[in-house]
Picture (tube, rainbow, N blue to C red):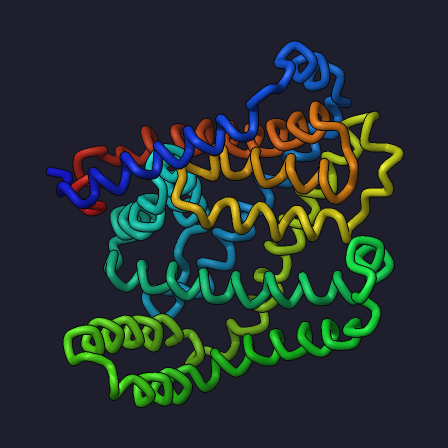
Length: 337
């Protein structure tokens, strides 16, 4: 049974989704949006699909390296299946996919679901660090684009290169000194209430166990490479669709623009709605119209194209593996609830 608290969380999630969908589409000419979508250059949609699949394959590939302390030689096919099923579930039940992924892999590979879940948490930490590293690097190398939006940008430009390098060094430091770092953080919590401190302590223990991959330095280089490949692909997936719309040709959109959209989309997906429905469309179209003066129809069409292609991809592939691997909805609900 789904607990009342979980049920309320789901209802709230769909209410937020409905609100942002209303904000995104309010006052829009739906016929004009449809015309805009039918006039896209479909070859770029093909590239978008290929790029989306490759980004998920690389994520599954990286997961294999993170799982080495739990089990060596985890099948790429099985890790990819778990990734796609998790994303598919997230399209309908936000955050539940993060539980479904280790559940699915545990069933397919016969490993501890709890231990596999620890690697999913570590993935999120790695994603945040690599994301900011790439973000700051792009802000440095495409400083002219950002200076047009923020006139005082040039004065702090060198900070971004330093920040990018620092994020990369933090990535390395976390792997080799994770136990020491989290022990220091735990020590700083002595003034918190005992009950709350106990919960945070257990969370830190999960982090430390997840970073057990540090004991296998031979895997570390590939974790770095695949992590930056994932974020680089996400950046490309925001950049490629610029060429799908003729109306975007005169707006000087480049990798700097794609980076800002990636930041905005990351914030949109952080809001607890099913797969960013509503929030992604609202935030992305607002950014394109307000910062880059793209007309509202094209901006919303861009958000629909990029979002719905990604959703369709995960639903189709996720459902295929869901049925092929005989995953049961009842067991997923039981694990998630």
